[in-house]
Length: 402
Image (cartoon, rainbow, N blue to C red; front, side, top):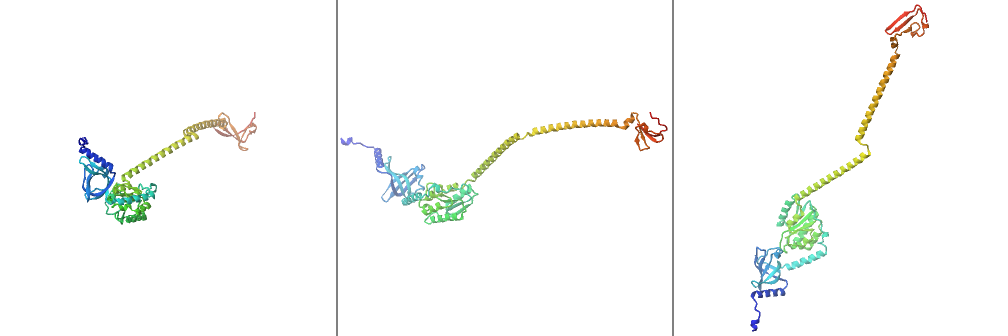
């Protein structure tokens, strides 16, 4: 009877109960092992197993998480994963649902990275107010990287496309290995000494944390912070973050991104210059309009202060007409006076008297003079009698005064 009353579970119920128990029993765990049977599906999810000498376990890493790994795992890779223990109920398989994955041995390096990051942050090397402004229109650009790096080709291609007019100076150095930090520091100092560039691009391609470890060097961090030339870092892929990225004045997600941030596009610069030219032309036009308005106001004030030129012209013409009229009147008056005087002179002309029948008797003996008194007439001397139409000399024989 007791056996009949016992609860009988289905396989699915049992698997779900196990899954629930596992989720309650285990929190996030770190597991290390070798990848086997790795498969990346078109959906973006990764499926593989982790194994060591004593066993193996199935693993799944979904697309939203594996996009942050930074490299494509392969079977045989030794890795460390952060995961939750779960059960795939349909098959009853215990599996790890992975949240993060890194190459084995990265734990110590990552701890060192976090420790140095905290120290430099406390010293203020990451503060925004310490960082220098990247010039918007650099006269020349310096590149610190390995001459054999694929990143150099990408950077040069991007700069040639965006800003072929900007000179490029390359400071070659190792970017990987134990000697790389010293080489990068030496390149930074060489760029400062030459003072030939306005901005420096510190670039290299992607890789593992070990490959990029040179950019987590403490002395390199101080050298970047103390550089008198602004530094743009473009190290690895977007998911790769180094100490150099935090210290640099500007961080780019990739080497190509660093070139794009440092060099303005040529067509964009031409557009900006055109916009500046249009703005200047507009300001000149506005200035001319303001000055023209000022001149109009001054002309109006001047017109109020001085007589109207047209009115002055009309007044001058009026005065001229009046003067001409007055002059004409005066001339006519002078002409009339002249005629009157001439008529009076004509009246006084002796010839006119003679023409009226009178005669003039001139005494020729005692000096020529007109005889006015009959007593002056004597017989014997010659007298000249002037008439209207001539004169005659006569001698008087007998003079009888009346």
